[in-house]
Length: 395
Ligand SMILES: [Zn+2]
Image (tube, rainbow, N blue to C red):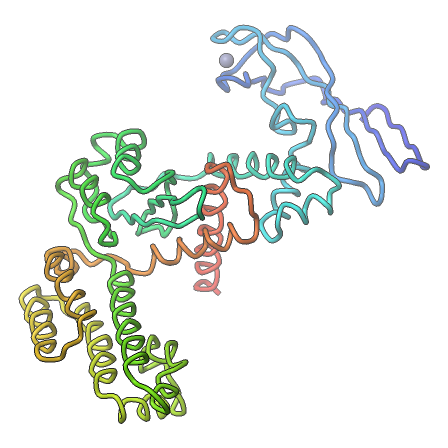
């Protein structure tokens, strides 16, 4: 530091810094290559971390250097990470604050515009992303998120092994996923994908089989169980309207109970369900069917799983449970993808976890019009959770 200025009224502090002349290596900001000649010396003013209640500005001396490859360029300086008027330390502090608070709150804390905070946060995350190792994609998860009436759907591709989202695309057409395979992966990378966990949305399956024909499609257990839950809810509603008088009151308000797995209910809740089942055998049957479908994923032998599925479907006979008949038909049509789980077990739940993380971000942040930013945010969130788990294992 060779100069400073303090304004006590305005509470500002200004520092002029310059590095010692000597053996500092100069690098080109364009290609990071070594440069020898200094063309020009310049100053840049950036906001730095505050000192007490003083807003601190630092005037940094930097060089324009002659790069053998790129010509005259600004040198690469860690303290000046971008063209924006903030030092790296300042940007890191803002980025860190954004990990646990919404951009609007951080903006208030640092007295910046929310859009500025988002831009800083994105640069912070880009720098972090650059330092990471690229992991091999062997198991892929594809899911969609409903964003609302105007933006419709977001397609989310994740790496099931790392548990991280990899790519977002607007829409949920075959084209959407096609562009992931075409633009993001090389032929070699596409060839390495062994399995994909998807819901029963045909356009995704079609795209995967076109670009990675060797890949096994495994239907996501959570999505299948969601269909089973929808079926039991339809039965409940039908029973509700069919019954009159006091029985109607009994079915009313039991939706959540019927959707919850038996093992997760306490004795009081189980009693409530038992009371209901004593009076309504059809709901009991539907509940047992939903509960037992889960058993399909406990098999390691394909033949046994196939037998289990067919036995399950046989139980539907004479039951007059239309929603379950529809479900059975769907399961039969997607049989191969259901049984593929025996051949290639994938981690179910990753897709769900990634999905709920993104939804949490969207709820908290609002206005993620920038998909790249949303992706970086979601990746950071997933990575922080894994790091935390690793730390816990060590401790
Ligand atoms: Zn260069």
